[in-house]
Image (cartoon, rainbow, N blue to C red; front, side):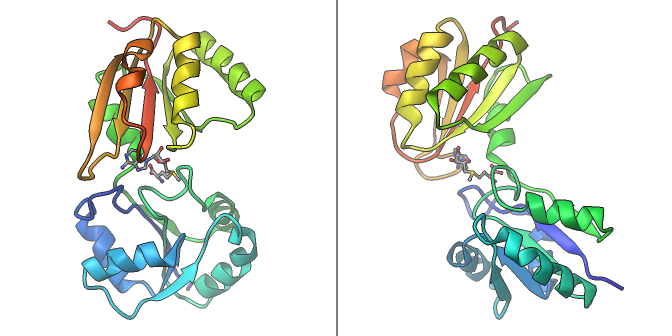
Length: 224
Ligand code: SAM
């Protein structure tokens, strides 16, 4: 019988944000596929999980690792997939692997837990009945602007991930294109310096500390 691949969500900052089941699974599997083995080692150490076989699995070697993972599963090994933070595959590696294994009938089980997207949305005060998750926006300006047009037409809550390097540009563009929309910015959630900002983007953009990790949520053109 083949082994199972567990897709395990891990904390997005505070190491205590992990489920008991995730810890059990990490303790019990034969192998852990880790985006950055040093980050995962820190988590394992925090939970006294020792002697685990870690396999490096990131966007640059994902394709190459698929055969190896498939063979391990075929041999009956149970495997966990983790990323550096949050839920694997949500703007993190794993899609190509899961797609291959799903198509070939292997057991794949989620171990749910944190994701920056859902955490930010849940405290945003913006409509959550229908939303689009855009992840990181395209690097090319033209492509970004095409996307803004589509957002405008959709009129749904939009969730965007951004790093410190491009947050300024994003906020400037949002101010220009959506001056009347309410936005919500979650910075460094669950970490020591977590901060939340809410209001019209042009009014709040200069107050936002440009450090750390961000989720930006753009409200609909009309919030009730
Ligand atoms: N897999 C993760 C998840 O489930 O949310 C996302 C990984 S993605 C590579 C990293 C991005 O997620 C960051 O650039 C930021 O936009 C967002 N993010 C992750 N942790 C965060 C946090 N603690 N506070 C704010 N944003 C965070």
